[in-house]
Length: 490
Ligand code: NAD
Image (cartoon, helix red, strand yellow):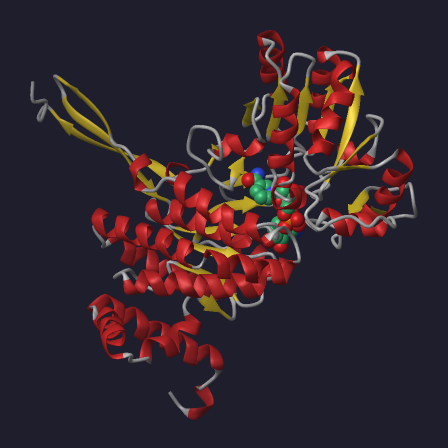
């Protein structure tokens, strides 16, 4: 290489190659072990480069090499890498949460930490990849789950690192590598976390660059993933615009799109429990998570009781005049007030209730979990995915009307819906009508992901494309292997 070839890109490519070679030969692991025992720091010096690239082509090429190397590892080794991702997530959860909160300004620290605790408990690894066998007089056929190869993943601003590690665990467990395009508003924490996770994988004997990203993600770098021939599968976690883009891509896309989860409270519900659950789910991380309760449809006869119970648990009720003022702060319009489609004011998304209150001249405590208030059904706060800690309450004549309006408010996203009721007819009717991926009865929305309910969980919930709560199985292809006439053993 002549001096004029010493461009940053070339140097980076050479360093990546050297790291890959050292990993293949086991040299990097030895170096890391020496580092641990002797306080030696050579590996630390290169760690800033782990998985973070200047351009998308490099990030994709590196992930492609990593995926080939991953396939050379045994399942025991693959499991070990997944265990490391879990261990590192828990070890760094406070640091990751702090940095993400500082960079985006969205959510609450304790909830951001809790997301890692939940995820590491509920997101399964390779154990969901089972083999199916068919045996008979004509021999034995097995079906196994194979990786796609290199996956291109788009992540949201609302939980960058939880989505990163959730996707990484599932995708790597399935034998894939992954190239991420993070939301630009999370680029620093994303690169930081990718670097730490890759470093942990290398130290555990895995290949470098199993997950990669670009240092400066943009819509353009994201679009490279959409059309790049080496990207075999797209996984998109985000709002309606990026999901619509993914549908246009010339390859398979798994899309985890927006939600606007309604919660119905009927006259048979345990009202105190309903109030507590709505605060737990809708107040979680200041209501930025896609499954969080976004509007309450309550039967008139128990509406006052529900509000009382919510206020008794720290919520602050706004009157209609205050809600109108908050609405003007929360939504902007493309073509003058009142026309065009509303655009969310990002300065209020995920902020504490006290910040929202301040915008309308109210001083409240920082730990108020939610603002609530009655609105008509056709209010913007009912129909838009507000992702902030104000939840509108709509009074309904009876349970039938509440369920019908919940269906309308969800807009067919098929994402999440919640009911508080002890009437089996109402629960059953709503479950059928809503047709949502998650349907939660008598608990917070989080229960649908294993947070206070049973079952596994994920932060990539693919409703538009139908895969549901994603696991390693979601990111595999089916392969069949047939042996004719032999190996039936009975
Ligand atoms: P967003 O749609 O603004 O951004 C999501 C990602 O898409 C970002 O990385 C962004 O850079 C990218 N993007 C946006 N437009 C694009 C385009 N035209 N081409 C290529 N990439 C594009 O969403 P957000 O505000 O960051 O996140 C919140 C949204 O994500 C909400 O709608 C929420 O419901 C949804 N979400 C869904 C799930 C789920 O599991 N279903 C999980 C988390 C978030």
